[in-house]
Every structure is written in structure tokens, then in C-alpha cells.
Length: 320
Image 1 (cartoon, one colour):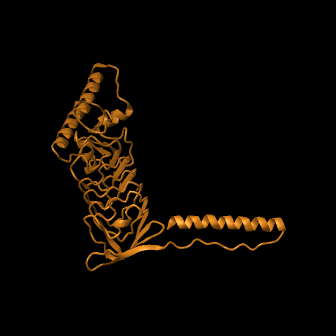
Image 2: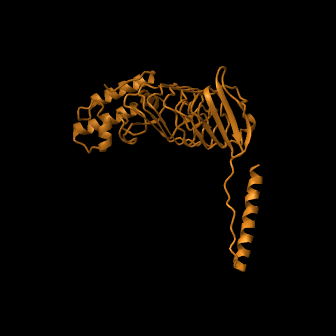
Image 3: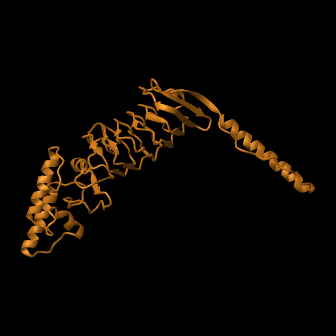
């Protein structure tokens, strides 16, 4: 259908050129017809609402899937009503009035590049955007409070994610294998993050069990985001701070707080006591001073070890 439209445009352009050329040669003024873009044709449509809801869908010849109505979309195991057009859908728009994005709703939409969700949406189902590799950005409505299992699993185009303070929980594999994800920001300091290394990762090696994340997790000091980052060796930065230098306790700037940081503090303290040449940068001095008394000493090292011990046992410590 799209191929026929393109051919028609080429033919029309050629016809215009011929008429225009003849008119110029003969010195005759020719009134050219006006051309306007035609609306896309509806390829398929149907119902997609949960029981008691009035939600419908339509797919057009421009590759757009539109979902509208009132109430919740249904949930699916795999085959949604638009399954036959999975690799033809480029854009998705969910209209205001729809309150739920169904489980597996847009699973495997690899060519989809954009999606619009209205403020009326308050929940997004499990694996809703599973393997949507073309999505580079998405605005999650303020009313959504939970990100279900694998909701953005393998969304390889996502580069940056900001979660509002309304997000109370992200579940297993919510951002697993998002290979371009370089930053994720948690505005809720108490957001529950599923306690596993693949919940936020760029890649996951199933043979070795390693899950890598080269980006930065942003959050509030003492937050669940910081505890998660430190437990799994992720780089963490306080919101509005500098990822390389603003984190208390992370003296060696490797994105986590552990015994190596405590050792560095003790070494620097030894140099201070003996009048040796100090090695810490200003940023490291700030990171080392976890008790905020304006100096680097053994008490800072002790608090860092206490913090590391708490994180290692699954607790959520603070520096207070």
C-alpha cells in the first residue's frame, strides 16, 4: 500500500514537470492543480478492552497504531489483536481515557520508534514494552506507581530514564539488557528496587551470571537507589551532584563503598599523622569525610566499614 502511494507521487511529479516545461516554452501561463496529502487508510481495527471497558484499536497505512476509549486495555500472553502487524507498527498513540497498558501489549515491536501515553494511564502491565528495541525515550505518566516485571526488558535504544517520585516500585528485570542506558534517576528515595543484579543492566551473560551496567544511577543520599547501586557495584550519584566525586564513602570513585575505600582513608590518615605527602584530591577529601567533621581520620574509615557491612547484609544504611 505504501509502495503504491510512493509510485503515484513520482508519476504526479513527472507530469507536473512536463506541463510546466511546455508552458514555459510556449509562453503560456498554466494553472497548476493543488496537491494535498491524503489521510492514511485504516488497515485493521477492533476491540482491545478488558471486561467492562470500552477500548478499541486501529492500525493505519502510515504504520501507526492508535488505542482509544475508556477503561483498561486487556492483558495478553502473547498474541495481541494487532499481532499480525507487529513488524509494521512504527508509532503508537494511546488516547486519553485509557487507564491501563496491557501485559505484553507491545511485545517485540522492534520497529516502533515512538509511543505516546496519556496522563489517564495509571498502570503498565508486565513485559508491556518487552524487546522494543527502537524506543529511545518514553514519558511515564505521573499516575503510574509500579513498573512490572520486564516492562522495558531488552529496550536497547533507551539512553536515559527519569522515574518520578510517584514510582514506588520497580520489579524483576524492569530495565534488564537496556544496552544503551547510561543514566536512570530515582526521585523517590524509598522506591523499592527488585533486589537482583539484572534489574538494571546493559547486558547479562547467562553462562557466567555476570550483569554489567556502565551507566550511573542517580538518587537521593541514603536512598534505596544508592543502596542498590552500592550492593551491585553500580556507579551512583546524588541527584544534582557529580557522579565522579560527590558520593560519600566512595573514595576511590569506583561507584561503590567497600573496604577498599576504608583502606585508602586509613592510608591517608597515616600520612597526615606522620607529616607525609598527602594524596587525596579535594573530591576524595569530601568523599572520605563521612562523619562531616572536616577531617580525614580513623573514625571515617570505621564508619565506611560499618556502612559496607550493612549493605553486604542487605540492609539500607545511612551516614547519619
